[in-house]
Image 1 (cartoon, rainbow, N blue to C red):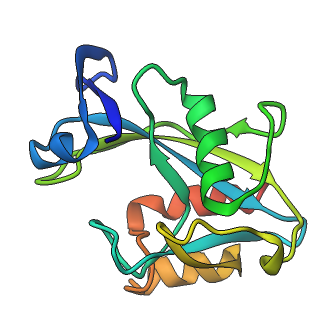
Image 2 (cartoon, rainbow, N blue to C red):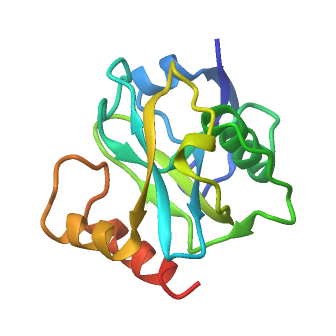
Amino acid sequence: MELIEIVDKDGNFTGQIMDKEEAHDKNLLHNEVAVFIINDKKQVLLQKRSANKRFNPNKWALCAGHVDAGESLESAALREVKEEVGIDITTNDLKPFAEREFTIRDSNSHITYFYYAKSNLNEKDFIIQKEELSEVKWFDIDNVIDMIKSKDDSTVFREERLSLFEQLRDI
């Protein structure tokens, strides 16, 4: 059971804590973090979500996840990177990035807080969390931008994320 805190439309805690799956079933707003892992070659590490994921199975995505009850945004970002791709980064390595993003829809409504961190590891050096991912791969940032523009269905990214990748190019 993964407990998360429910937030209001301004991102403030409501005092409600519940299991992540129940929050999803009730479509209650909660916090998530996403970390762009980038290298010196202007590439971003994407991870292919496992086939058993409730949302967006078998699609390329960022290292991301829910903020556990009582956990800070930064701690959640560090934890997700460690759990999903097996690398240790510190709060000094983790840089806030862009504005928070509100996703309000019929299911899985959430607020995402973005960060980036740098790594120059080879793909084979990442230790992936098999329950969550099937593989990781470095993608040229410009190629991801092209994938978004062409509405490539192999990724979770939609046009609203285009500006994030364009900003990432300039880091």
